[in-house]
Amino acid sequence: MFLSDRKVSTTTFQSLAASFFRLANARLSDMQKQVLRKSHELLKHHELTLTALADQVSRTSTIPYSTVKWNLRSLKDMGLLTGGDLSCKGQLACLTQEAQMLADYLEDTL
Image (cartoon, rainbow, N blue to C red):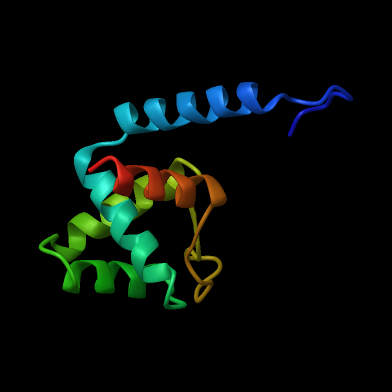
């Protein structure tokens, strides 16, 4: 992460984290936030591929499947979600640590 021998102060880290959350909150659409929060909730308790995750998010919410797929692809493109693709089918979906923290932050700010 940081290529320095200096220690990052807690205040600096908290400021950086707060900036990340504010930026992500402003950058993500409401639908992306909703899909992120629901994905986080589901992936805490289930191991799912991206396709299965899209199906479960759609089934447990009012979001159409195609909209969920589109938004999961966007989250993946942003580096918040990993999972299989055409060349690597069957790989489990996984939110990055940053995405998990962001989902928790978004849940707390509702």
